[in-house]
Image (cartoon, rainbow, N blue to C red):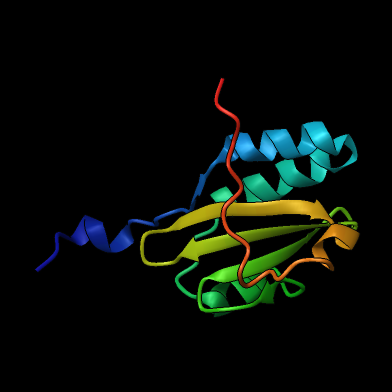
Length: 117
């Protein structure tokens, strides 16, 4: 049996590749505040499944059991992430303009690679 205090532990989401988000707002400065807000909101979330996510982000598009697309900065930008709900990890996959998003297959795009310095 679990100790009583473990029943009250609230696990929050961890965002992998936060540096990638920084690269995104360096490329698209007008998206910086929206990305920072998204980051803070997701970091404090505790989603267990896509339904939990949809309760918070009704406009998010659930593409697969783990792939989600968020509208950023009034739908001018799209952010694609993969979410491991059990592990509470959000992986940043891709970020770009709505027009760029329309030219790709969001279900198949692979992770963006951050430049290492």
